[in-house]
Amino acid sequence: MHKKIMTPNDATPSKDTIQKKLWFKRKLFGWGWYPSSWEGWLVTFLYIGVMGMLGYSAEYVSDDEFMLRVFLPLIVLTLLFIRIAYATGEKPRWQWGKRLEDNE
Image (cartoon, rainbow, N blue to C red; front, side):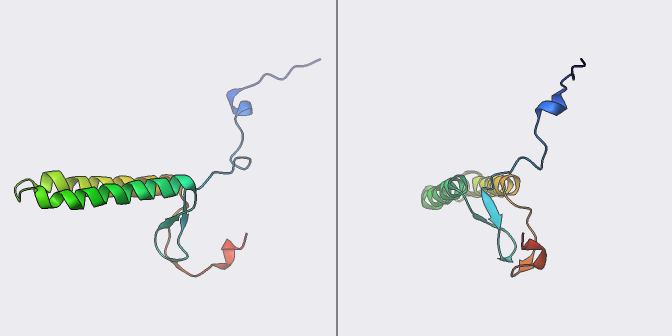
């Protein structure tokens, strides 16, 4: 009787068997994403909340400190938000309406 030796590749499921949970789905019109799960909505609301706090705090920051305390965090958090959406969402592309190959 021959025993099959298990390798690390045998223990991991293939890409076909794993259905990736999408936090963000591609927009139907234009380019970008919209939240499609509670995780996506949580990230979106956190982003909006932090942006609101930065906007509110901008009134109390001197002109000399504005770039460091408001503008730089705004840019970094926006890039982080885009990175999260890209990593946890569908591949973005420009589209205008539903494509025929999307009818899966």
